[in-house]
Image (tube, rainbow, N blue to C red; front, side, top):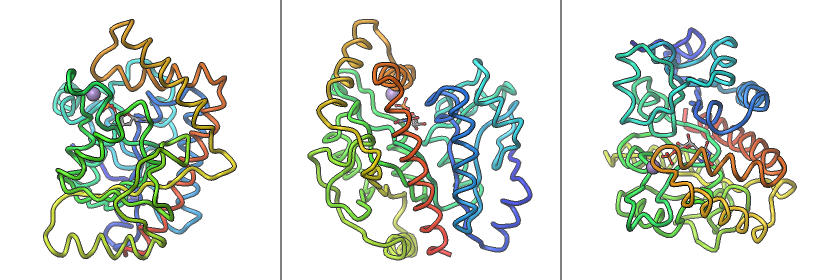
Length: 298
Ligand code: PSU
Ligand code: MN
């Protein structure tokens, strides 16, 4: 039911550095062909740093750790790929379907495979208005339970970042800023919120991982790595588009698992692709740091 490709399984046996990568970002987070180019570039960056990339998805009911070019291309182009969170996992595998894994499902699979470091763009969180809708991403529960370090560029302000921080605190998940005290908000380096702790080196982060897990403390941690300055977007401009996107989603009654992809697509369309460039660069930046953390951990 789980297939780990040869390179990844050899690296895991030899206790070498491996970095897990999600696939929802490919199928539901970016348009074709930028998505497949991104997936290949991310793998190359991780290899150049000296670690082994492991892109994760469910292909025809088989859990795959490490994908072929053909599988990546299918995930990038097909319209029938299910967005898989923990709730969808059993159904998709038992029905032999193909699914792109979110941060939550990717963490579950990383845990099964024994991968400790995971790179992505942005994590899910507590949505604005969650007091009424209860819309809290499964990503946060999986961060609370799985021993995986997730490197991201913070979370988009489509979410309520204050409530997301509270939820992470309740669940005992560290929110670590990489060389920053301020929580980055994906497109922007600033959000108006602090991180819990500023960490300055991959070695410091690896040490925290070891100490936490050696003490038997369960769950993962979030490393928030700000987008490089050259690609960062202006906060007021992004705030405006994000508010518009949320109003549109409410007007159309978009709900549940469709909300995040809807908002991502709206933002992309209404910033004339400028946000897509920023999105690609921050993912590359996260892949590089994740590889360095994985190497420092081993
Ligand atoms: N946020 C982004 N880009 C993404 C996602 C979130 O900026 O591609 C994807 C990730 O796969 C994340 C998922 O795990 O959306 C969260 O979805 P939801 O909000 O439905 O839990
Ligand atoms: Mn949700």
